[in-house]
Image 1 (cartoon, one colour):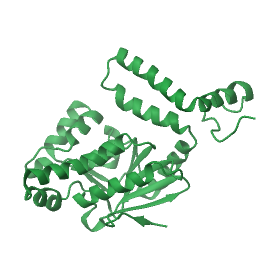
Image 2 (spheres, helix red, strand yellow):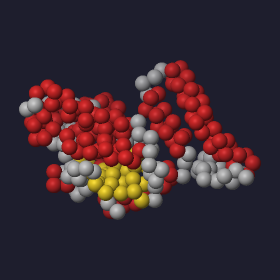
Image 3 (cartoon, helix red, strand yellow):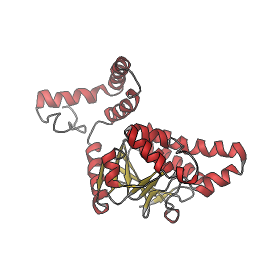
Image 4 (cartoon, helix red, strand yellow):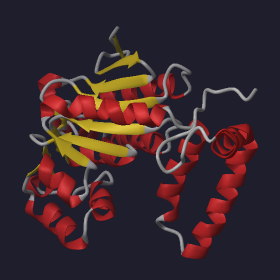
Length: 278
């Protein structure tokens, strides 16, 4: 059954451990308004610790993923309220992107259509990203006289080479899903008709893995990129110790199944996390 947020601008379903969360303003190409940003935080709050949810997929209703910030509602109407209005709108949008970056569950962006400007915030916030080959990506801010803000420039420099990031930000040209995959904005690009099947396949693989280890791993990948090697080494030791203190039996069970039962090979798949040691 499809559920919607308080204002109806976010839709979501939970099926077989996967929460399918969707931008739900198809008539506006899912542009992010202050209302949508508040509703998205509401839905993220609701699903984060729901035991029925193991993976969250962020998608879009209609022909777009998100066209970025709603120029009328996010910019013109909030700017009319002065600095306080602008700052509130920024807190609400950046707030749910930040929440998504450090979400308790693995997250996947399923980019079915347009992904522009501010859409790079939630795109980067998701752990993995898959796009339709027909999707369109763009930093169009330069075309209407501003820089790619809201973290979009940072996302470009994190995911792209220097020359590609500079070209992408300065030219304001669109690229398709295939190019986005080649450049590193997304993991893979597939025909739209097979996109959901591929995302479902990936989500099922994640569902089979230890959730404590997944959370520690996704946090580690985001953290260590800005550390020196020695800092990263120390962080990873402490992170593993913290994970062990929270779920040491899970780690031991994986080792037991490999060494004692010989029931799986770590290089070929995950141990059975649902199996109880006799």
